[in-house]
Amino acid sequence: MTKTFMPQMETLDELRDLQLKGLQKTVKHAYEGSPVYRKRLDETGIGPESIRSLDDLEKLPFTTSKDLQEGYPFPLLSVPFEKVVRIHASSGTTGKRKVLCYTKKDIEDWTHFFARCYEMAELTAEDRVQIAVGYGVWTAGASFQLGCEEFGAMAIPAGPGNMDMQCEFLMDMKTTVMCCTASMGLLLAEEVHHRSINDKVHLKKMIFGSERASDAMRNRIGELLELEHMFDIPGMTELYGPGTGLDCVYHTGIHYWADYYILEILDPETLKPVPEGETGEMVVTTLEKEGVPLIRYRTRDLTRLIPGQCECGSILPRHDRILGRSDDMIIFRAVNIYPGQIDHVLSGIEGIGSEYQVILDRKEDGKDYMTLKVERDQCVAQGRDAELSGQIGKEIKKQVFVSAGVEIVEYGALPRSERKSKRVFDNRD
Image (cartoon, rainbow, N blue to C red; front, side, top):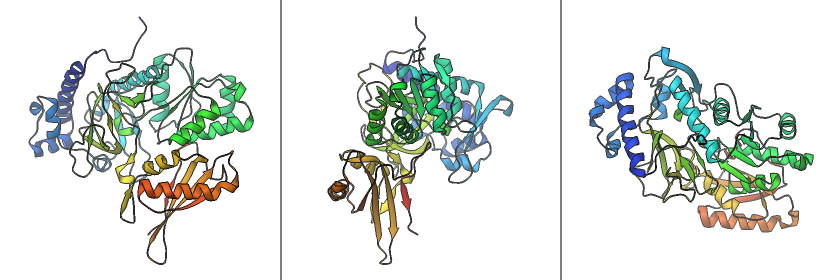
């Protein structure tokens, strides 16, 4: 029998039984191992013995990024230091880095379910996987590589950037799968097209992590590289890192590894569950994590649960691609806007490229103004700029409920990046 990394269960009842045992184990482990968790649970009157069903999850207190930052450098550590074999850290763009400790079991679990991602993407041992993500203290490089090696495919640890080397490896190593940010995927696709080396490239699949990719960007990458599939891989440092789920070849949502964590979708204001299919904030509780278990951790990521079972037959539940973050919301003239909404509008308009910028200014009259810089598609004449500008402005007004000035720019005029692209520039005081 071919080795599989998928959970060995056939029904949702079996999955729920496993989740309950994992939840009981996690609460007991956190209570006994972490003074912070013990104090928090004691204050709410909830102990390990209180968890008798999955419904008891709602009784548990929330954990936030503030808990991780205040506990720097080893927040919420729930094992003795001698059991810690590795640390990883977030980017630290909003203060102290969030440092997470990992035990040997944590690394083994992470590697196992990351290999599951490659299996879900229907890779084989004959695939050659070029890993163009950051190595070092970040969670990405090591996890992509270890998961690939555990799965049994060839790992090519290229790291990010360096287009000359990336293109050389694509041709010489006959890379079939590329792992990178969507921004780097676009940069690489345009570079391959510019160098006219498409016939020397054997790339069939891309796995995108770290940032939201609009449909327009994905379509452009797919067209330039003639890809069979593009996959979304979620992940955050707090929850191991990348690899906590993947969309299958049917691309109807991201299967998440519900045997390793429980996912709740809550209203970010009321912190109550939203109906299945409606957008809310992802809140996660780990079931196997030793070093830094998470109990109802507020990720601030916004998505929705997708009802029903996938065509692929997997019982693993699905969530949609990440819409944005609840703390990335733009308030413009009393309207709440998420960048993902603008992605969605622009992706539905023909004649424009995938790259854009949102620029917010406050002028001398005291009012806020929004300007959208949008690239014209490569094959579209400049004479259509007025038409495209008017169409974009109309759709933004209709779907996002705000007025915006629209500036059409040449294809390639906006910056590309091998990491995450910055799209929103808020110049207001």
